[in-house]
Amino acid sequence: MKKLLFIIPLLAVVLAAFRPAGTEIAVIINKENVVDKLTEGEVKLYWLRKIKKRWPDINKNIKPADRKSKCEEQDSFYEKVLGMSSSDVETYFTQKQYENAEKPQDKFASDSAIIDFVAQEVGAIGFVNVSSLSADAKSKVKVVLIVK
Amino acid sequence: MKKRILFLTLVVLVAGRINIFAQDTKIRFFGQPEITNYQTTEKNRFNGVSGLGEYITSDSTQKSKTNFNTGNFVLFVTSQLSERLSVLGEANFNNKKNTYNFEIQRLMVRYYFQDYFSVRVGKMFTPIGYWNNQYTMGLVLQPTIQRPFAIRPISEGGPLQYRDIGVQFEGDNIGKARLSYKILLGNGIGYYGSSDKSDNHVATTVQLGAEPVEGLKVMASGMFDRIEQGKPNPNGSISSLPDNGDLQLLVGSVAYMNPEKKIEAIAEILSQTSKFDNLGDYRSFSYYMYGGFKVTDKLTPYVLYNYTQAGRSTTEGDLYFAPIPVQVNQVTLGVRYKLNSNFVCKLEYETENNKTFYQDIVVPGLGKRDDGFVNSVKNTRVRMQFAFVF
Image (cartoon, rainbow over all chains, first blue to last red; front, top):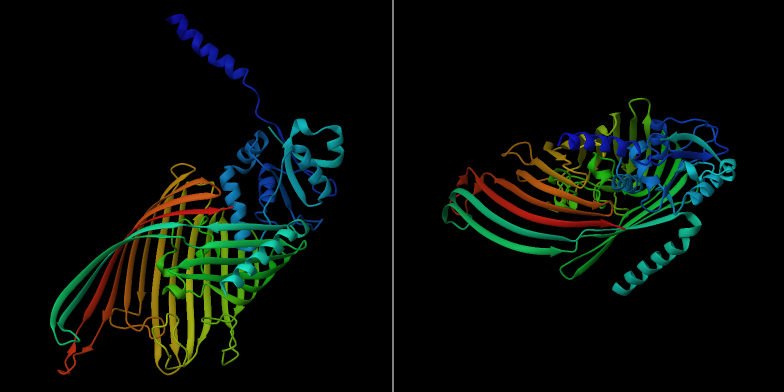
């Protein structure tokens, strides 16, 4: 019995240590955007277009890019950066659209589609899995935050 | 006529479909079928002789019914025509009994200059109070099934001109306190772009607000309009108003609706003054308080209390809004289940006490003036709504 009491906590510690790490997210913006770094709080404000609707200096509309369906990257971004559930995020954009005719976030099926969108749209801001940022992708977009 | 409306709708839908790709158009549909079980008890307290010459102290009637309603079906379209220019169209369809109604709720263009300055032109919701701009037809977003009595539109016996046609200047997120403003110059109460206005007055609605803490909004709004002699009053109880005058509706609002927090609350207080040029001033007063608590992400029980006093007291009506004094007390207990962002189910139990104070009744034949007649109607309702957006 004593052995069992010793083994169970030990197993728990070992399992916790070998638990797969959470999805690492990179927040990306267009290369032409003059912003270099953003904090998590700033990303939240920009991505939700909460205070500013346009980027300072480049004077372009902020265009948030999202994933089309539920995935690890989206879960991680919503939880760690926005602190909101997916349902609350959708309701938030619907409310903005309903109240002010504001365009909701653009949605994409994959990380590569988000990278292409951010590379094309000067005002875009999106999130992708760090592992999706190949050398080619890094040449197209600017990483402003890594969320672990 | 029906065919024409159907054809027009199809044209709009097809046109919208074609433009989806060219102009970043988003189309949404809001729907809200509803089931209501309704019971009403009507009591008349009459301390004397009735209009028919009978001596009555009180009488009461009771009735009950269950309804299934389709509610409104709302077509909502927004399009980003350029970096700064967007358009919004909102039309609702509903059917009551055998009639079908179609109405353009909003149709406007918005030009965005800066965060602190943009302009809207067209038909839009009046910037009066918090609730009116936040929810209105999009019931999947609204925390309750119906809006509180105090802020019901004129067409439903309330005080609000909930939308108007005109031009609005607005700005938000100004400074650390996140100040906001909206100024609407519109046609005013009772006019929806018709050409029957007899003068050139413009109704002005002003709203000033601040969001000092995330999700906490504090607002003060005022609507200033002109009352025209000879026109009916808003709810139609007077067919021809006896005098010209000024109308003033003031609203104070506090709302804490932060999706990241468990507690949600809204409170608004309204004061309406009708200042007739020759017949004096009349006042009506209302307030409501809403509170909800998110037990889980999906489940939110809530309570809503509303008080409305049409007329300055139980012996003095409001010549413009309700010539016979009316008091409305409304308590709603409800629970909201948000399956996801597209579907919300709400269940409510509501009691509404509606008292009308008829005073100084002249008894036919006797010439006697009675000192009071109170018509008290108590409504209890159980309602269930399935609100969706797609």
